Length: 123
Image (cartoon, rainbow, N blue to C red; front, side):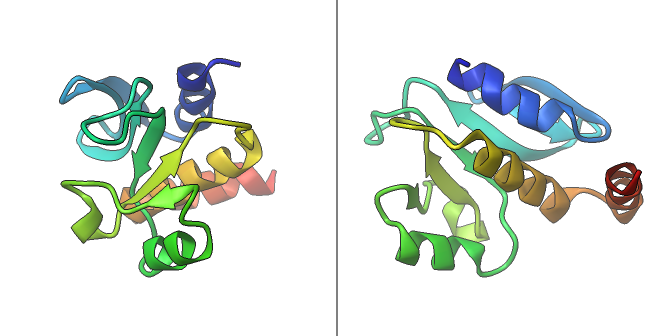
């Protein structure tokens, strides 16, 4: 699976998600408004490796970057808001990427959509 297709599959399975370019990168939005994942397939500025930026629950960025600084990083522009950078070079664990994308979605989606997601997951 190519990188963009893998991230796309993880994000577009979530309720009311759309994709469009934002700042030149494929990005995923809740209800067309709130960004929760951006994919830099060819890298971005000094990070010249494929990666994504995603919203993250409070404290997750610090925890993951401290635990695995070779895989996770504080991305520019959005890192101060707690977003997480995730390297996509090497072996990609698509189940983990799916979980990170869902966590990112949950960080920005309205409660009604989170409830819909939880209802879909319990079926």
